Length: 100
Length: 182
Image (tube, rainbow over all chains, first blue to last red; front, side):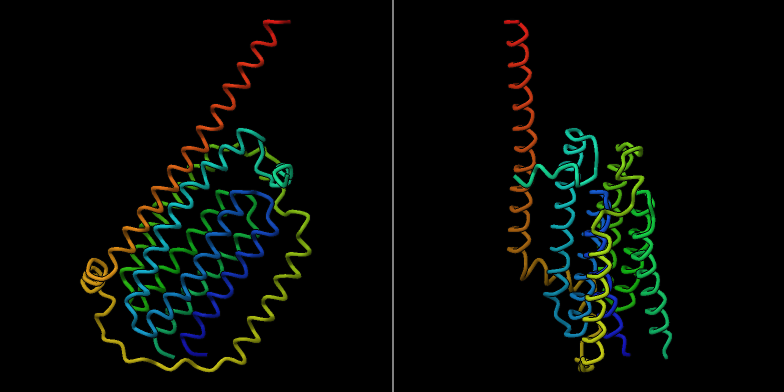
């Protein structure tokens, strides 16, 4: 197995573990962390292909994804804190009423 | 096996260990520390690949900003909550079945895949100077668009909080009026 295949396998594994973590964990904050893990897996594959092809546009894209991910967390965490103030729990089952 | 491959293997193993540990740790603070370990290992992999700019941004933005923000949020929460004491949701069996299925697809893709052809890349194409010149020369419009999107998102978050506050004020006013009539 060459280095590129190894890193792409790691990227796929991180994505899969993140996806399953979002499904099986009970805490909303931990689920948010697993979403970040999925995003890190995707970024790893983007970096590997950028390095493989020598495309500097890929590096710029990775930087922009970093910025958007930071903004996403800056908005998601206050929303979670508002939810906790309302429902007094981080268990997603307590917010089943949001389904409508 | 070259020394670069050995380092890549070590850091890949570190990233994977952190990701797997996130499943089994109960307290969100420990989960956050495992995620930080994974992110630092990924930064080391990026540095090993010669993408030093990305490695620095990974540490600065993810570990330095995102995870510190999450740790602040964890410190604000009540650890006696049920979601802190019980790790898994009722979807545990479905999640394990999905994990096995996706791992099967991944292994199948790796076994069938062809090796990637190497492209002759100049050595300094991902240096800080080359990145900065390309960024400010060719891609500044995209960065400006991203900044506008971020501004819109922040205004939306503030609006959500404001709507909620007004709703609470209206509800408090109604309750006060009802008490006055009673």
